[in-house]
Structure formats: C-alpha cells, structure tokens
Length: 164
Image (cartoon, rainbow, N blue to C red; front, side):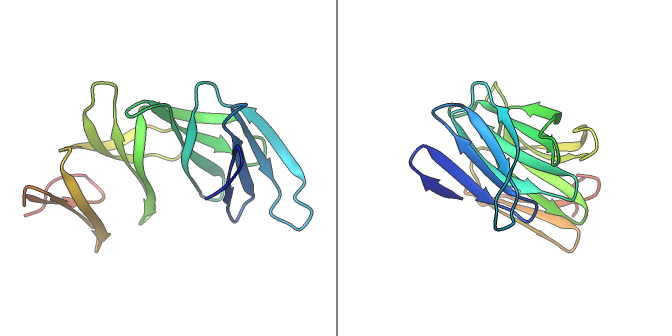
C-alpha cells in the first residue's frame, strides 16, 4: 500500500486500486503501462481502506470507519459491482488452502476468526477469539492462536474445531 496525498494505492496482479479518502471513491485501473481506468465506485462512510487482496474473480476490500466499524467487500474485478459484504472491521484477510480467513470485530466489540465462502460471503465457520490475541499461524491445515496470557488454541482450518 502506498500513500500519495489523499490517495491510498494498492498494486495487485489484476489491477491497481486507489482510494481517495477525501472523496470516498475507489478507482480500479489496468495494471498495464497505460493504466486505463476500468471502473469507479463510491464507498459511503469509509475513512480508510485497510487492505485489499484478490483471487481470480474478485477484489476483497477491508474498509474502516473507526476503531471497530467498517465492512469487508467482495467486488467483481471487471465491473466493481459489490458481490457481497460483511459488516464489521477486519484485522486479518488471507487465503490459505483454498479458504478465505478473516479476523473480525463486530459492533459489540466481539472478536472472531471466520472462514468465509468466497462465492457468497457466507460464514463456513467462526471461532471467538480474545482481545489479547498476540500471534497466529496457518500451517499443516492447522491454525495456531497464541494469546498474551500464554493460552494457545489449535484449530482445524477446514472445520474450525479445536484440535488437541
């Protein structure tokens, strides 16, 4: 991510996304040398774009509007149309073994680790996490959550169930 004045820019394989936080406008440009404009989208109530990731079909945009407010958007790459969204602020967005994982805080300040279906945004599973989550790792189809308190949780990445 780059800042240039009032713009945040994200250079991705499928294009370049720039967010003008003064106007609340997200612009997608071709990643080629000409950088032709592909689409423009107004993002209402967004103060900042925290992160953008992509797969072959969609851009996934983590939008922020305060400490615990925001939404996570899945946008169609060619048109910028919103395919689905999840309300709340996302702190982690990553693909692992074919799954999309998010750490989210909702309006009641509860933190969750989610596995999300990229087709429709449905939650495949969710797991509550404590605010003192200090470290996480994804490997060998396991998710390891380490807390500042010293507690460790190990989850199966496919099902979200605890592993001993």
